[in-house]
Image 1 (cartoon, rainbow, N blue to C red):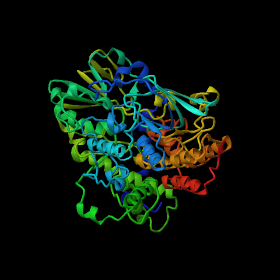
Image 2 (tube, rainbow, N blue to C red):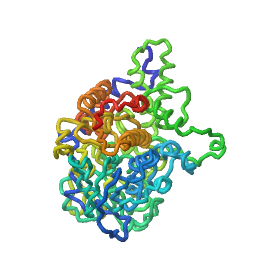
Image 3 (cartoon, helix red, strand yellow):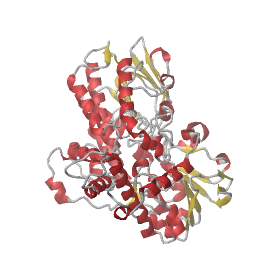
Length: 598
């Protein structure tokens, strides 16, 4: 190695050992099984806090060309592309009282997207809209979702406060029978399951959770009646309350500053610290907007996607914390001008070490107490967990009324009627908030809150008993005319709406092809499915060591990569743009390769 330690500023071997030690503290044999099934054990935590009056309507019995389940960006983009493909006879079904999906449910204080708004908010050019800030807050994102629904007439016929209970293929009629909690029976030729990967709240199975007698809720069901305030903060009703929050991931990073400002005392229970980089939000530059040429958003989205997939581009259009690692890589390559380090993976690791050293140094800039600062420092590769960005999170831990309870990787020990127990010490709280995210690696039907039965009555859970099998991450054999969206065996990008948009185009193309013939059924063939599964495995293998060495989280299926649909374990890892090119090439051939039409 031509780069000496003085030039690097850190010891790679020492960091690798530190990363291994911290990872091992957090490994749990039950993996994703450490989270309980919230539907069964705490169903009231799924109640909609935004509905003041439940909707009353008669049951519907009708035939449709298409049903889209879910009205977040996943479902909205599917509906929009289906409309553009000429599909008029369709309905959206959504459990919430309005569109928005994640952005409907996540109305906690400080809610904000960590992806630049100019690339995250889809269809900006089509809707002639420009976000107010580089990083949009929840209300603006939710309004944009509503604008998409209005523009493409998706409110027309939408069934809100309704959820699908059963989805079964009728072989005699070649239709999907969609049954809902309201007694609806919809016979649809095509069904798009657009629940998205971040739809089912995740709740840790803490010992004694059923005994806790205080207020308890998940951040995706924020109770403003209890806390006061709104998404901008002002949680005035917490002034005399001791509040505990479990979790320090992306959601907690955003709401903890507001809780710290409002509560009599705030206890932050941390298993694994997040990587917290500068946010540096700013208003949209009107001169920049005036300079944009048609097609600017697609170009910007692709540029970000290339860079965050490890590729190189002549220009970094977004230029933020997500793409900074690529700039670090270029800098490390310049230091290695003699080419002594020929291994690109090693150069990438060194660039990652450099970036994370900056992240850890940033903690010291804001937190003077050495013990607290050390507890807030993340010891893992940057993309082992979703990076976070915030300018007020770290300073919150300098407040006298805020206590960081670092569990040293073990998590909360148990709950009592009025306290959270960590390391044998009780922390009395009036309110306990779970900022524990959403289920990603659990069974697909569990996350969709419904069982799906294909040909012969076989359930999707049974069909995937030995592992997820799809063609292009969207269809599977024995489940014709069905599209399972949301990120299984598909391209990896932190900008989820990019994936939804590309998948939606693919879905709309296939549906349009199917509707050209009155009774046509389109089904993925087993050999094509097997070939795609192998392709996914081939691209994932080079990343398997990285995933295994990562601290547990939903990216690597809680430390068990390859055993579920986590970021590294169950997706096409050849780059998002390469994946989207595969879909486009497939459509351009026009022969529905790998599918049977009958």
